[in-house]
Structures are given as structure tokens and as C-alpha cells.
Length: 161
Image (tube, rainbow, N blue to C red; front, side, top):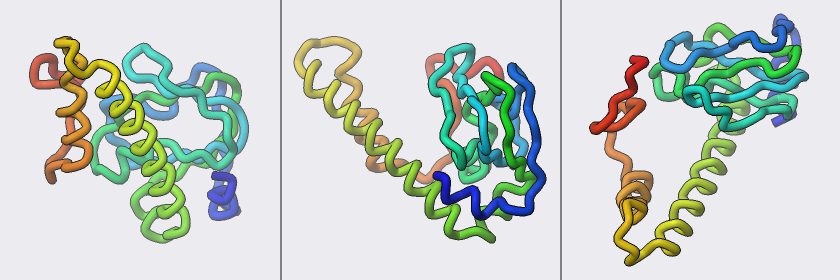
């Protein structure tokens, strides 16, 4: 994602102190952040699900693309330098090369998730456990209905929203 950095030249760099929040799960800001240097944590609830260290990594893209609240919290694990883009949607419309790079990253993530779920489905087929519902999850990923996604589930809606 280093290629994203060339599209940020001339933008204001911002230093973010360790433990500072850039994005908060459940909030809608329309902002994107591009990591210049440092280490950022991505959290779902209180669980760290990823640590981002690659310069040029884009954060906040799912919220911007879906037009929905942020799906995760992003926190600086160390003092970090980022580009803050207030109008993420406008930036992606203007910088189609960046939008394509973001689309490729999202496609890679979806491929990894579906490959993993397909493996779980194969391993637990016929075991009569709750993991058999993985097939339903895979079907939904492939044939996603045109509706807004929301955190949580029908059984346990996200209490933070």
C-alpha cells in the first residue's frame, strides 16, 4: 500500500500519541487515515484483531465505502504519524488509483476469509456442531443481499449502537 503515500503528498501530517484513538467503533466520521509511520491497532470491542505497521495502509475505508458507522476502533499502539483525510468519500472519488488499491486489499481480505471459512466447513462437516452454519455464512458472502450490514446478530444486537 506504499503506493497510496504518493497520493497524499502535500496533505497535512498528524502525529498521534500512543493509546490515542483515531476511529471509534460505532461512530460515523467519514474520515480516512493513511499510516505514514508507527503502529496502529484495530479492535473489535476490546479485542485487538490486527496490528497495522505498513506505511500507506488505509484505515476507515469500510465505513466510508459502506456509508455506515466504523466497524472497528483504531488506536495508536505507538506514537504514529498519519495523514488524516476528513472527506474520505471525496478522496476516493478523486483518487481512483487509491480506490482501486483499497478494492484490491478488501478483495484479498474477503478471499482469505472465505478460504478460511470453507476450510472450517470442510473440517466440521457432519459433526453436528454450530460450526455447520459456516455454509450459511459462505453463501451469504457470495450472494450478499443489497442491504445495509449492521454489527451484532439478530440474537445479540450490538449493544453499543
